[in-house]
Structure formats: C-alpha cells, structure tokens
Length: 265
Image 1: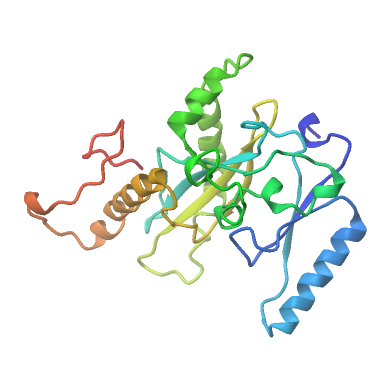
Image 2: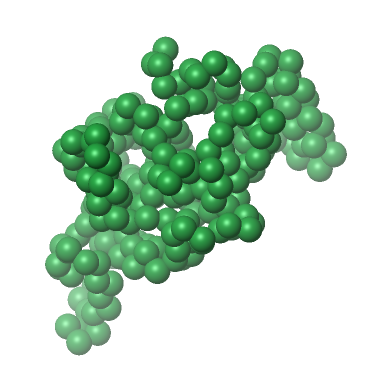
C-alpha cells in the first residue's frame, strides 16, 4: 500500500453504485460501520420501493492527498466514446475544490464538505465560492499553482495529464466494446472521469461517471462545456447526419489557447 493511502486512521469509502452527485458516499474506519451503512442504504431502498438491486464500491481512502490551500481537490476530465468504439479525451478539464480545510480526524468523517468535492455537495457549504468561483480551477490556473510549489518540479502536461491519458486509455480498452450491450448501430456517450493526486504527486483514478454533470456553474464551465459538446457532436452526430452550414451561420465557442477550427477532442 502506498504510504499516502495510510496516515494511521485506515479510512475507506463506501459508494452506492446506482447513485451520483456524491449521494450516499460515506467515509468509514471499521467493518462494523461499513455493515451498518450498507443496511441503512438497503432499508432506504425498500422504503422508497426502489427495485434496484443494491451494489456498492469500496475504495481505500487516500489519507494524504495533495492539497490546495489546505483543502482537498480532484480533477474532472471528459472522455467520449463514439459510435465506432473510438475514444477521445477532451484537452481541457477542471479542478474541483472543497470549501473547508482537509482533515481525517475521526470526528469529521461525516463532513461531506471536507471529503467530497462534487459541486452538488459543495454548493450547500457556507464557504462555497469563497476561494474559487464555483469551487473550480482551470488547468491553466492549476499549472501555475504547481509551479508556485517551491518543492515541485512537476510538469502538469508531461507528468500528471500524461498519467491521466494512460489510465483513461487502459480503462477504455478494457470496456469500450462491452458498453453497448444492446448492439445499437449508432450511439455515443460522454463520461466524466475523476482523478486525485496524492501528496507524492501520484495520479489515482477515483471513478468514471456516466451522465456527468453538465451544469455551467462557473465562467470556466460556461466556456468549456459548450465547446466540449459541440466538438463531440462533430465527431458523432455530424458523421451520421452530415449537413452544410452557411459560413455566416456557424456558431463558435472560443476557448483560450485553441483555434476555433480545432477539435479539442
């Protein structure tokens, strides 16, 4: 076990597989607590008459993550799987930050504002948006943050993003031809991959999400999401239903550092 995964508390994460947006995720430190959390979740399903079979993911909690301003963060990137089973990684993503200082004290294991960076969770914090607009940072700002770390000689693109690409590639090669169980002729999907860095700058995959949140909760996402979707449609819908749009009617979604004619996937 990497040293960054253990700092004396032996914490774990429990995630109901059928939920998203941070719902139902718990941090625990004993087998007894895990069992009680599972029973509680199953009972809630029964009360709601939900016929979904309960299944869970259990992950080791990284107890020594890299922090921004003493707060936890993760990295969200988008991955496109096309109708021909090709996959693409969008060239820009964003960093999601928590609102309060990080701690693994047993007294705050239930504090979701400490442990979960999902916007659906953080937006209810009294400190939401206090440090970053929408609790988000662009890759450009994150590169600058890494440069400002006096002990860091890390290159975001050559080290961190390169590792993200490799992990995405391995995971997609493993499942890309199994995703469409109904063998539909034309289908595509955009996934939200979440990664975390530990205190030693190692990259770890947290999860890959279907139906990722596309809320434009900051100026950053108001810029990235329309371009991400438009460029995805050019690789999918436009390949099946080609059309000629008069030059004067073309809608562009500019992103700094990229030409409007460049597909960012």
